[in-house]
Length: 632
Image 1: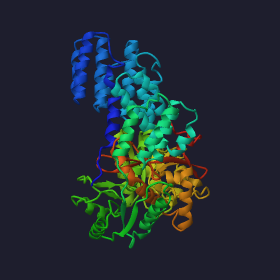
Image 2: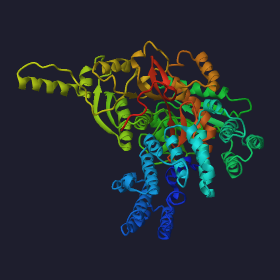
Image 3: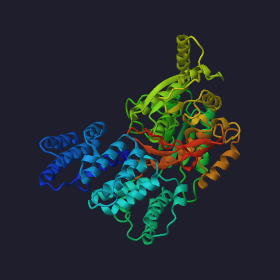
Image 4: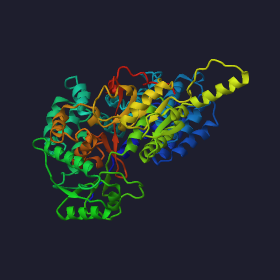
């Protein structure tokens, strides 16, 4: 029976927009005038029905009949409605005619809050945090101040700080629904912390509220497959943290979600092309599944796992699927080939759910029993775009190989970058078989244009003049698509062509996965995103990594990310139902923080690092980073 899809993403989207200056009247924006108050009640009703444009029009119609400061208040209320309705650009246009100096103190603070909300809607959390520094930390605006800061911290992946803000917000809320939504958001933030962060950041003893949230998340992960055991230990947790916000209805919902998700399947079928061109990657995924199976904690449930050769065609993969179902599989992992996955996607109905190990080329339809999970390079390119945007960049140049992989990666990066509001100033392609990329880099950096201007000036003046080539100044970073060998050549050439101060962002392919400070010294300063399996060291992974290195030493590094894919594919199976239940925003896997979208795609949030002294250093641990706050 297909696993239900009651998605966490719907909750997260609701929290993003409904919590931006929620209601714009419950805390921040209730002027004394009774007419405005009645108008606001009408607008709130429109927003409840999803008519944000109607609410904004209601405010604006009244604003045209009034004078400041009431007119300013109404325009700010209209802007808030537009932000919540997903139109931050229109909201910003309403603020263009305002200057903070001309507003009353109350409207000035409201103005700043709306600008911060617009920045968050445009994925500019650093801008929002800067704006919020000017907001008083007491008085009628404090709840919205805390809420917006929490959202900004979450957008910046600063989940510990986001949870802290949510905890401070909790006692300020009087509406039970708003309070429950805030507690769910607190849970989402704490649940986004890694296991290592949960251990190292919990420093205060009970009954510390933050510590209580962190311990509850740890218990939930420990008893993920044992909801009854979790119910048995929560009374002790409640004794340790009396009066904790998670007690009561939230804890009841959590336990109900755990139980509703059901037990993991008794049997898993795995479809992989164990012979042929993809046999190497397929065997690494298989061995990752085996390693995860034997790494199951004592007392954890171990389903039967049976492997099937999916062959080279969609037809053979479909046959393997049918055999697996006949043999009793309750869920199938695989296939790996995109064409085989497309063949299964077109089969309606699927007798048992499928956790595919690839991504459909075109999402033309959604099979409710199909989940798509893989290491798509497009995911990494989009992550890099979001990272560069969060760090304040706005104008990119792109350097990519003349290959289908290069075009795929660039296409994903460009689409995400431009959707955020970024601009691409130049794109150059290079031959990955060559070592000298001088001509292409000169074009990328406009050094050829600089030289041409010098030649024309020399001809005009009729004499030689001193000349220093100058690279383009309209770009603030390079998006680089390259292998380790190519990147080791390209980065020094960028420096040679006067771009040493231009930040470089890349996907995981830039890193071999094996630390080598000698070979990678030339890549210092390159920022890239990769799986936690590659970039992090966690105590609970040590034994697993040691086993893989011991049993498969020839392929442990070469196929490291594919071993990680196998590990997460196996471990994700019992979690799929819980992701569907709406309480669990992400599964913290070795391939990334995994979340489920409405079309059954498993999205990965990666860790990002920068090369320092030839070694990758996690960005949040890099004390020498000078590019974290670029002025846009």
